[in-house]
Image 1 (cartoon, rainbow, N blue to C red):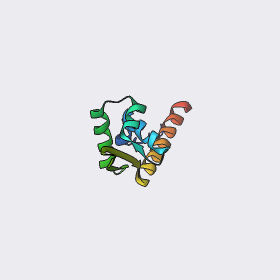
Image 2 (cartoon, rainbow, N blue to C red; image 1 turned 90 degrees about the vertical axis):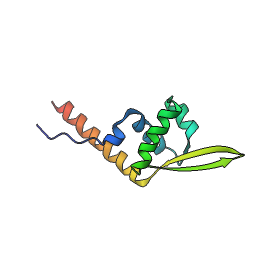
Image 3 (tube, rainbow, N blue to C red; image 1 turned 180 degrees about the vertical axis):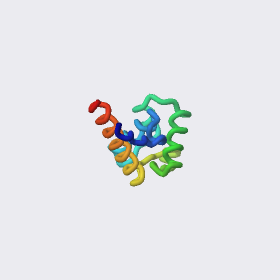
Length: 100
């Protein structure tokens, strides 16, 4: 039996994977846009984005626009690499499952 690939535990969470997938397709995204796209609560979204930030997979910029706070997130190069490796591991895992 071939050795199964390790799945990155930071990315493997459902919401974190969704966030990285969304961020992969845009230059940057506002917190409110990510919340609307994922249907997540503010607290859960903030916690998952913090985990991705601590891992170095996303960067955050906080600023004010017309006196209103705005938080922008973008995927880092490290995050893009980690997501690519995660997708490759999933493909390898699925390939092993299909081959059986």
